[in-house]
Length: 80
Image (cartoon, rainbow, N blue to C red; front, side, top):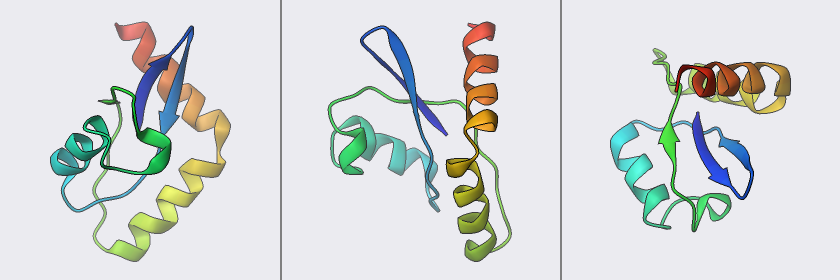
């Protein structure tokens, strides 16, 4: 899960990848997903899974579970 500050609020982005450092670099150079372009992203949560299908299932669950996403986001922001 990535986080970025947009005006006066923080937004999050969820995705899966085999190479997290490369993916983060693509997002921060505006070569990643359309939603991430033009923003500076920080990695705040990651987890490894044994298969791509499990990773995609967990990604979807996190994308639709706003409560969990906000909990992860606010835990990160409180630690700053």
